[in-house]
Length: 237
Image (cartoon, rainbow, N blue to C red; front, side, top):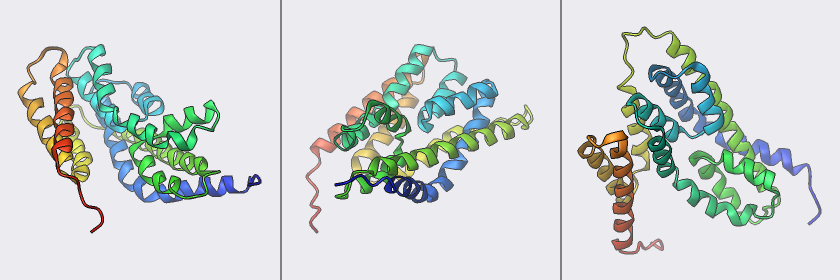
């Protein structure tokens, strides 16, 4: 098929456009993160740097919570690794479609690959014409990245104006509940979430914040076991 350079901006804009409804849900989380990061003792530059370079909402919230509790840096890194293991599955799913791209393209797309970008772009990669589908993912990822930076900056500005007596501790668990509840769509994920919550409370006394790591690891194992033991679903009905 001959090159069609005019398709590139078209695909890019389509990816950004299809992501716009999701940004309405992403922006509030960015606001909360910016404010919570300041509350946890990070500077404005450090808080914005996490969003600029890490760009992973769940990982950033976990990092803030662990920093607040005085967790050792190595435990924070290990916890974030466990939290973000799902991205390996996203990458494996998209790898056959982007394997032909240069390394610079794959590096950028991998950095911009989030839960939301994967959800928006997956239907596009299921179509027959994939010559410029990576531009669609780029548009979706950059739209999310831009929204996350701006909402984080707004949260930092808002958080800097909050009096010291106004604690934002309650916002972190509420934010995680809002992020987790919509994903509880089947038995394995529900069992995993419940197991993780119970174990996190039971193991809270472990040193260096290892209770959270242990709870996540065991809960993931429980979820996988439930998935393997569940009868196959009949999708033909």
